[in-house]
Amino acid sequence: MGRYKIVDRSPRFLPVVLDAQIQSGSFEYALDYLIDHELDLSGIEQRYSNDDTGAPAYDPAVMLKVVLLAYSRGLISSRAIERACRENVLFMAMSGDSAPQFTTLAKFIRELSGEIAAIFTQVLLICDRQGLIGRQMFAIDGVKLPSNADKRRSGTHTELKHTAQRMERAVAKMLKAHRGRDETGDDEPEAPATQKRLAHLRREAGHIRQFVASHRERRSDKGAIRKSNVTDNDSAKMATSKGVIQGYTAVAAVDAQAQVIVGAQAHGSGSEQSVLLPMIRQTDPLRTGETIITADAGYHSEANLKQLEQAQIPALIADGLMRRRDARFKDQGKYKALPDPLYDKQAAVRHATNLVQTKFLPKDFRYDPLTNSCICPAGKHLYSNGSHCTTNGRTHHKFTGAKRDCMPCKFRSRCLRYPQRTQVRQVAIFLKNQTSPLPYTERMKQAIDSERGRQIYGRRMATVEPVFANLRHNKRLDRFTLRTQPKVNTQWNLYCLVHNIEKLAHHGYAR
Image (tube, rainbow, N blue to C red; front, side, top):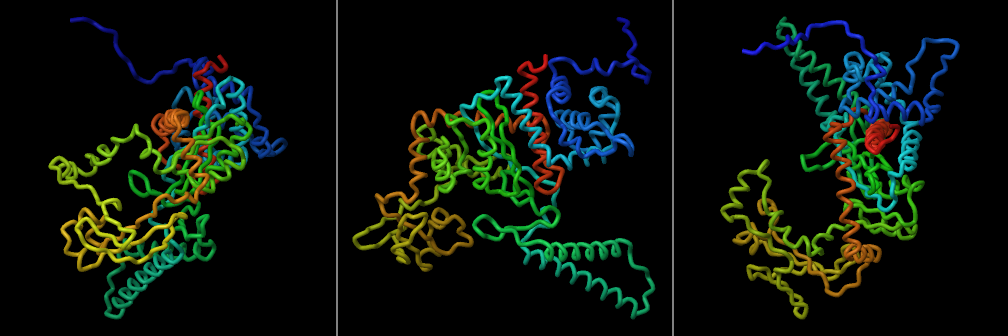
């Protein structure tokens, strides 16, 4: 049997050259060189006024290096970053073995909101100097991420008041039961859990009452009431593929040449239409008259397209029906019909046994303009309840089925989306050959449906999606840890900085 050298992992003192840990060509080397020799951090240094008195502060350049290095390694917690500065040799080398405390790190990140835009711009200029920004196409997209906010504490002011009333009624009921025990002479002390719950309900009810009294009702751009959140009122409830979250939409504009992020912003709204133009304005210093802006259907609106055309900004913004018009996606229906086996295994069984049926569309209804009548697929006449209705500027005729026909109909499952709660079917028959009331949308359709338009727009996904994959998977950005929009926006910009510095390192910067 062979003999091998002993593997000894017991503690020992070893000489470590910290400067030698930062290897040329690595991300940390590019980061170290960039901050020491390129970036102007005078905006951060103005915060410190301890020239003559006070204890020495941590160097802001060192703090920025530590935070960006931590984010590049998937460390977002301040306590985890502090532990890395004590135990990880690379973090010791980057920080000069200064080991800042987690409270100092958290305070530094929170207070970066005023200077993060200037730092981001400086890094972009360096990327441009290195030839990493092509200016041919900027792709804009966003990702919805949870925030440090409680989804259960969301609602309109009316709903929040109702929640506070329920808590106060629960407190009154518990106090009444306590007084009842006193009157009967029951000397048994109140359980600690009950006392704790009583104090918690009082505190929460008071907090909600104070919030409602001191904050205005949130409203959308169109004036509709939006849900507020007691823990972070800048965040919003958003629907995602994994359910509803309380969080922010992190938006990025990415250059197509080397996937450098040229604009970044986090906003607390599930609607992306309102952020398109501000994101484009962020790219003004880098964008030329030939730069094409691309974005998916979430950013499409007639108002946005009008402003883009008036500003003479070339853009390809998809609409919701773009793929239906594209012959390359003519077979996409068979894939959409397939259920997700991870979430609905019974649906997969139903599909395998051919029990899934398609729903009736308006084209399945027979409309006769001469007699002004409409007959459903079951052969029943529908009532006319509107002959000159308008939707998005287009005129249509509205028909509704009768209860006596729809309730016992054998086609309810195919005709109604929710047959359990919907009683009758309604259908709108649009008049043919109508002139579109949305001229900017029609012009955008013609541009994006052209051969050149499809070719350019086809590069959008390959430009922006790998960026989000890098930040979410490689950098483990699965949620924001700060509250309020300025702080969340700072954290998002720091992660985008990490991505851009990685691009610099990969393309030979500072070697």
